[in-house]
Image 1: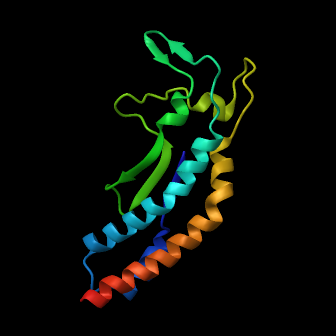
Image 2 (image 1 turned 135 degrees about the vertical axis):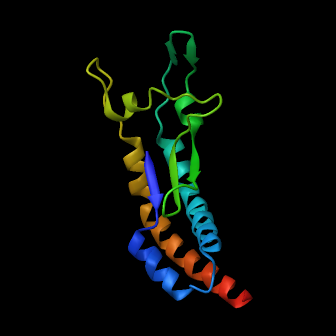
Length: 147
């Protein structure tokens, strides 16, 4: 799981610059920017996610090949003090990637560790962090100009 969040120090610094806006508007701006820049991370993670040749069956729950890759998505949070989005396998609806940790960490029975999540983040983090900072400045200025 990759968690993309704005650091508390960064948020507080930006909030001082545009304290004319309500905190709800600020959080909406933060969340939209984080979600936008989580897209490349999600695409890279899906690209690197391993696909088993046979799928997995556990009890009555069949997981066809490619199920883990298909379940990867962006999940936003409205809870907590700071806006946050996660890029990870989803666990709602038809998605139940309970076995996510097996390919990532490996098993004692011969499944080699495949840290595709870390590789996806390493490949995209420079562009994501730069893009977040640039978009935050631009969107904040747009909102201030509307006042």
